[in-house]
Amino acid sequence: MAAAPLFRRVALIGLGLIGSSLARAMRRGGLAGHIAGHARSQRTRDKAIELGFVDSVHAAAAGAAAGADLAVVCVPLGAYAEIGAAIAPHLARGAIVSDVGSVKQSAIRDLGPSIPEGAHLVPGHPVAGTEHSGPEAGFAELFDGRWCILTPPPGTDAAAVERVAELWRRCGSQVEVMDPRHHDAVLAITSHLPHLIAYTIVGTATDLEDATRQEVIKFSASGFRDFTRIAASDPVMWRDIFLNNREAVLEMLGRFTEDLTALQRAIRWGEGDKLEELFTRTRAIRRGIIDAKQA
Amino acid sequence: MAAAPLFRRVALIGLGLIGSSLARAMRRGGLAGHIAGHARSQRTRDKAIELGFVDSVHAAAAGAAAGADLAVVCVPLGAYAEIGAAIAPHLARGAIVSDVGSVKQSAIRDLGPSIPEGAHLVPGHPVAGTEHSGPEAGFAELFDGRWCILTPPPGTDAAAVERVAELWRRCGSQVEVMDPRHHDAVLAITSHLPHLIAYTIVGTATDLEDATRQEVIKFSASGFRDFTRIAASDPVMWRDIFLNNREAVLEMLGRFTEDLTALQRAIRWGEGDKLEELFTRTRAIRRGIIDAKQA
Image (cartoon, rainbow over all chains, first blue to last red; front, top):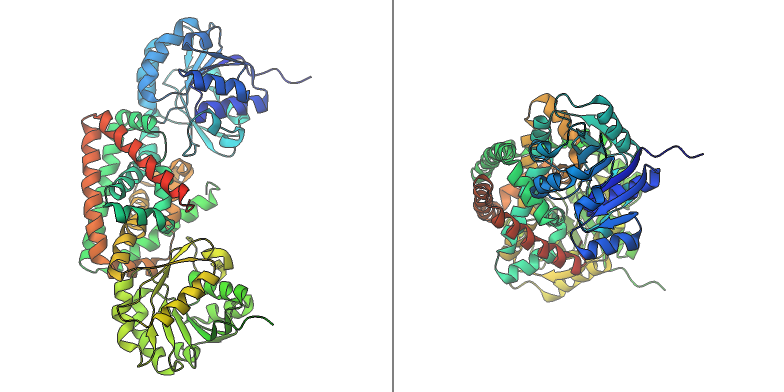
């Protein structure tokens, strides 16, 4: 006999890249008795049914949440407060509310007030993704071998945290529990700043005169291409990340700008030793990533 | 009977990623009667013989160049002037001197004065590469489907240019002829600035306190990883690129910094519309790259 599913009814609020990948990974692992999906657009709901990664779709978030013992919010951060208020009254008693957003202090700020008595807020962040968006972009293997960070507020029920941890482990991930503020600082440098920079340089190239822009595309294999991939990520999701992790992003951006200005000066004054020293040092961190099997 | 090789004896000055890939691609296409390789280090020369992509190795550049009808300089830009002077007296009459460097005005400035009467300087830049270095890193397919830009100085013999173009086409590349100054401007934005930024942000992360740095490695899958790959490229090669394309790099860096400052301000003041507008616009350039089959 197959093991009982971890959750009886899971509400996935949002069926984009992450939401639909989570549905597929839960299907693969037999982790949910019923997966109820909510998406605002009819097209996404139709696609979810066609692709078969949910058991039911709902035009209202409340409909998906009705009777759910787990709700996972998979929408841009700017919609959290509204979604939290919409789903809370409909959840099963003692339900867990989680999410997959890239900023955790704001997730707690925006979802926290809606969590009913007896329910549990266990925010999560699967550190995985691609530059593609939408329900067709998801796949069950997205989380395999990747980290998922949980940031429960102080005093959260340990059993609820463990159930969410187990869900992610059975979706293929390694789980780490972290302070929300620390999470936001680490992700500011590993994710938010890289995306900001990639968006910027691709924007700078876009503003070049037409003839040069065509050549930028033609000769993109020389480094630029990697930035365009990053800068093709979902615009609304990223707008909300920057608006909701403002403080940490501005801090890391300040450090980056100082370092870039120093390099600019080294180039202007022909200080080859300084350039070579930095370029040699940065190789070590790549080696660390390869050793950590995250390459 | 097989077609006659394009060149009787090719001297490859430098046997790193690009030099050794070119050797392999020439082998694959039967493009050279004899491939003579020069590398400064004994280890590289031994490895080249062991891997079998050259017919002879030479501790002195002059030895590889002796009697060659084509010499291709595949060393960092800072060594060009010295290499040019060392090989020039030994080339066959009417030989072609080319290179694979990422800056073309400085290539012409540094190699030009050594080119003997009757010989031809046809600088080239295969827009292809990986983050790996050394003779083991090369492979014959590196140039397949990629661009190679030739930047002959005004008045260069058209037949010589065509022979080099044919070499690259038969190594799998598409060839474009371009003004050296324009090349350096285009590559400043598509290649040099992306590398500078990647080196900078990886350096910024390296300078974080130890605990955070370990987490940066752990959670690098979120965007940072792509930058570390770029920032693992050969330090001396890149030092020389920045020192030799100073003007164009500083110009593009100035534009980038202005754009980044504008975004920083938008984040600080919570101007979500501005962020979303840029993030939407940058998707289009990614689409262009995919359409141009350079993704």
